[in-house]
Image (tube, rainbow over all chains, first blue to last red; front, side, top):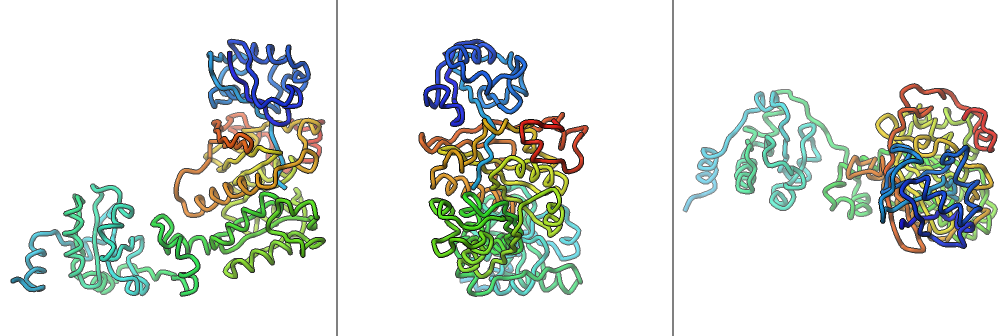
Length: 90
Length: 387
């Protein structure tokens, strides 16, 4: 089981939770598991069967785009962060 | 009992001395000036570090952490430096020489000298807590007073950031903002007051900042940053841009302009209980587009005006931005370049993710495809024509 950090903009889709557990050995499997339970996440995370270009996924602090993208392996107990851009400053 | 002259002669025989012409030829040596403040203020060897003899033991390790580095100690005429050289040897410095004839002989040889700009007495009082920190000191404070920081926005992030930069004595603060102070701002935008309701934010901020510190010159730009005015504003010359914008088009515009003008950006963003802070260093480091190549569709990126923000959050994030800015200006510490700091105010938790330069980045990558300003509003509208 892996804990996935949910950013504020996506929390309404997961019942307001800051983090949710998910199962999977790769980022793809984790996201599939999350989206099967929280279908509202799909349009906000995935585009053309890949991670949406406006969402960053970090495994152990590394952007998966610099690793193997959606196929990046995730070890048991790893920290996964979903991070969409925020523009607010005022 | 040996008198002063005997002791001086004895020590002179035990330590190494170097004359001015040879000292002038030395490569890589650190010059330590052990004279008093008033003597230093009247001129010193360029690049020398001032540690008065009275503070030598306690401050030398900050000034010269590497005990193997060649050091030339000097005073006015080459006597006090003999004693100081011995002290440094006793502290474990391995390669210390005393400048024979001191600063006087150095000047007599016609070698370069430097007249330090110095602080006025009231500035010494105002910045005394900075002057006590070895990493800042008089030189650092003078650097801050000569520095120019451009703030994008005088709102949630711009307010605390500009207040701390002004208090720190950053000499010129540019502020770009085209809004008026609204009642809904006052829960967090602490550069403005109830009395300023309805005023332009740049005018209100200028009043607040100059009242806090008259050393600071606030340059106001009462306009929205656009592709049309950005080059004119950046041409005024800035050391650091502090980005506290409230929308994606401005974020991407600031990024592209900063890469092309080669100005570092201290980035902060906030939403509800969460903040993000990082530093974008043009050329060396990743840029905003390396972090977020594509803006989110507008429906997935609510602003603080739509989604709300805890009032104190911009205080924390804006202060972190001020901290990064001051470090960049002073050239000290480790900046957040290459790291994105995430702050969760509800959990009171900081975390960090790595940021890497994207070789395929359209602006800072190896083969840039965006080389001039684009229509940023369209780019962020969810119907990007240039993605």
